[in-house]
Amino acid sequence: MPAIRPAAAADLPAIRDLQIASWQRAYRGILPDAFLAAEVPALLAGRWAALPGPHWIVGTAWRDGALAGFVSVDRDRTGGAYVDNLHVAAAAQGRGVGRALMAAAAGQLAREGHRRLWLTVVRENAQARGFYRRLGGREGPVAEELLYGQPVAAIPVMWRDLGLLARSRAAA
Image (tube, rainbow, N blue to C red; front, side, top):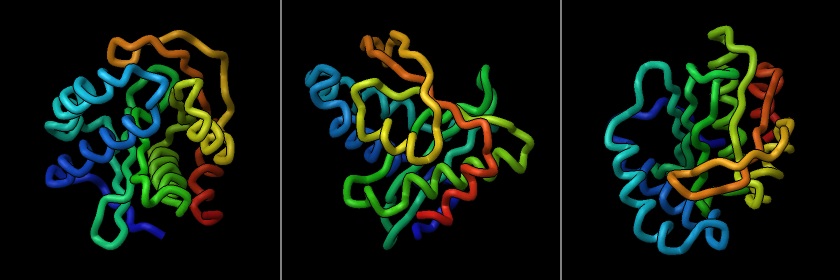
């Protein structure tokens, strides 16, 4: 099991680099190569220049001293707490890191009195969609969105039982 802890400012470069690598891997063939190669690093450098505000949860997972994954959740989003990012290093995929991060975030949200959690996933990202279904997420209807100016077909995924999601870590 990975060690889960809140992100610290010192973690930001590793978080940024992990998200860049994850996007470049997951969205190859879905988003333009030039966007992934040139624009994504600059966009995410700005995004992770500082930790987000107090209404955010940013949790990190560590294995052998290296960042294995992270989750960021906006507690103040219309429709419930919103998973803005969940990324797992390629070498750590399939080892329970994503499940542990989602379970930890859900547990914290449930303790704070939140009732549901949601996110959007790009329709063509079959690996992520399968992962969220295995965690009990329920997909909604496809909607067209802009992802940093890039048009994508996005699917909302919702969890209405945060206690059940929090307990899913034990199944990892």
